[in-house]
Image (tube, rainbow, N blue to C red; front, side, top):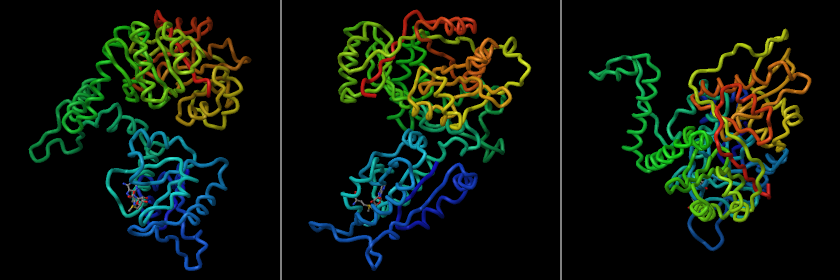
Length: 474
Ligand code: SAM
């Protein structure tokens, strides 16, 4: 990932970001941090970059010309107009979720203001996002830019040594992190909680979860309320867990936000896939969700997953969505992994590993259900698509969709009938379990072959269907 920081003080950001984890990630080539000096682009012979604001008022403003030319020098080198963030106290407050979203970009331009800010006209021309790091005013955008680079970089795959450490931290699932302890076992008469020395991972996990909830309640009641509301929904959804596993998983993975809840009528939004999920016990009740979602989004939603057929027509009418697929939902309800015997046993050695963008064209060629290259790119970049290789030749793949379901299973025609499909499916079920999630997938109605495969793996099917609705404008 490449950061391009536009600033009047390039040394300040370069020095600040050259040490520790971020510095090492840059040395490894996982990140590049380029500081562009706006002053180098002024046409003023005295190298001036600021002037008085029209209409009077305190202080000076950075002028449009040097900012625009500095930005253009970056944009001209890139294939598309880059996402350009102006650090400003007038922006949306920076969050962990925003850090995750920005980490998916290949290039990010960060514009640091100084003095009283920047001429509005150039901001209108180049800025795509306005971001603040909090409700206070600093003298310049350099510290906020460094804060953002740090938080975003941590979300870039490979920057943190342990993949998991990004996932169990504060703010995941509306919870703060649990308290942590290191050696010695006793310090100032304070002993480390016994359970942490027990070696019983199940008990340790339960203890940590309880402390995280307790701590969030004490220190951030606003977050705790969100957590609690989603847990109550989860209890209701659990009553029909096979049908609702997609919604339960979004809650458990900590990426859900509650849109609407009234008894059995529940709507949540998955922040990662930008998908709305809805369930209701009657059309009359279900319709209430529609007005609520409309109020929150202006009616412009890209994806909606329904769990009852009676909601399909109202959703079509009210949101301008169409029904793209109806699917059976299959859930692997056991905790133990699938056996790895009776799988592919050919002579050529098989290896399964995460795919890189180098395989993008092959994936697009073989995966027929989604043809959007941007979607496939995001799935690959997030490390969610795994390829099967026979002697270094890609012969199939499987992965997780953005909202967490297993899928995208393909075995290339000339390699079928060698149990490679079952091998890939077993791999993804076991990896899902290892990551602490419930394996589930969705089978498009009519795909008998996939149904048989899922049944053969011991997956349980929900009685009802799930309905994927998509925007006509996408
Ligand atoms: N006059 C501006 C206003 O009231 O919105 C404040 C300008 S501030 C003194 C100078 C620069 O510092 C801004 O252009 C911005 O780049 C940066 N800055 C100050 N506070 C910030 C914050 N909380 N978050 C992000 N950037 C900030």
